[in-house]
Amino acid sequence: MSERLRGRRLSTATIARFHTYSRVLERLINDGRRTVSSVQLGRLSATSAALVRSDLFTLGFGGTRGVGYETDKLLERIVDVLGLERVREVVVVGAGRLGLAIASYLTQGVRGLKITALYDIDPAKVGSEVAGIAIRSGDGLGREALADVLAVVATPASSAQHVVDQLVAAGVRSILNFAPTGLAVPPDVTVRSVDLAGELYVLSFLQDHHDGPT
Amino acid sequence: MSERLRGRRLSTATIARFHTYSRVLERLINDGRRTVSSVQLGRLSATSAALVRSDLFTLGFGGTRGVGYETDKLLERIVDVLGLERVREVVVVGAGRLGLAIASYLTQGVRGLKITALYDIDPAKVGSEVAGIAIRSGDGLGREALADVLAVVATPASSAQHVVDQLVAAGVRSILNFAPTGLAVPPDVTVRSVDLAGELYVLSFLQDHHDGPT
DNA sequence: AATTGTGAAAAGATTCACAGCA
DNA sequence: TGCTGTGAATCTTTTCACAATT
Image (cartoon, rainbow over all chains, first blue to last red):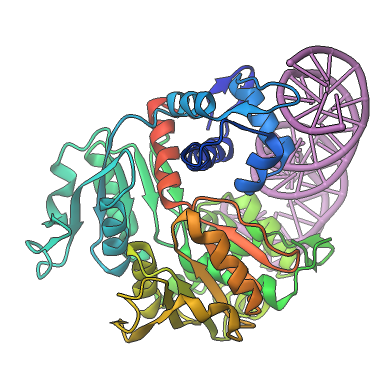
């Protein structure tokens, strides 16, 4: 994880926050808001005002003291830095419930992301179509040329590593993993993992232990 | 975020890792593995061996030097500490693509989680059924008694705050939010946010900037 | 020889504090 | 007065290092 901006490090957490800011800003602009203060943007983005200021400082984007930041200019800057205007192709591997769920979610209004393929190893599923996308056989995956696409792995944990090996062979360098397992990849491949059930278990645990605001 | 174990703090990141360990251990036990070293468990859980050792040390769970940790005992301990054996009720608000996706994913084999209700404000959807769960009207949400349940918010960002206010009124104290917006809640309510599109944008950014392993 | 146990060190992320402007 | 700009301080998380143990 790297990339520097204005001497500070752009960590994945920071990038994720920038993306959230962009969504919030779109909404604010839609509502006719011209400026926003760090306090307000922080509240709308589930962060602190200090962190918002620190982030925008890192971005090199200045506001007006006593007033705040210009919503449209700020959005423009974030879109530019994150490259949000370009369209990315996404392939989803695993057409089980989760895979279909994600695929159907992404086919609708998610700006800049376009699902181009859906793979499954189950021959019974191959050939059918979901939300306009044909399900293809996972067998040939390793022989396809998939550089530049973002891959989503939504298979059972037991086959995730195998799928990832094939994706890597196909040239994929960015993988979003929903299987609750670690994945071994070459150093030039980035994997991010999301564990939906895990998030709920964490909430469950915190509730049991009535996590007070200390 | 709190709760101490053996003097050390159990942060949400740690809890999430414990959950991952549990999934990995289930698989290992299934494969007949009796012991696992921190290096192996780390690899399978997308963490470092050092962190695994540190986590298990925090747990107060000891291994055998030169050998590793006993898989079955360790799983038992984690299940016990995290309370994974109890069944949690989950309600999902928002029966759009994402809400339906999550609901259908959770109705199948996710141990310990049981979807009990699905809400939407769209009258056209209310009454229909998804994976055996009737869609109920979101209007009455604030008047229900929903203490102890885990709530999943899968509405558009614009209505998320309103939904959350109603959930809080109904007694909900744990919310998993998929809307890309910050949510204001009383201090005794915990919110965790997942931004699926955001994860993909982060990958996209890192790929554009060929994030070398520094 | 392999692997845990554990404090200390390092790295990273967030918050503070307050000067400086509009 | 309200809010940004920004380094310093703090807090958190992770890694290191190596003695201890099987």
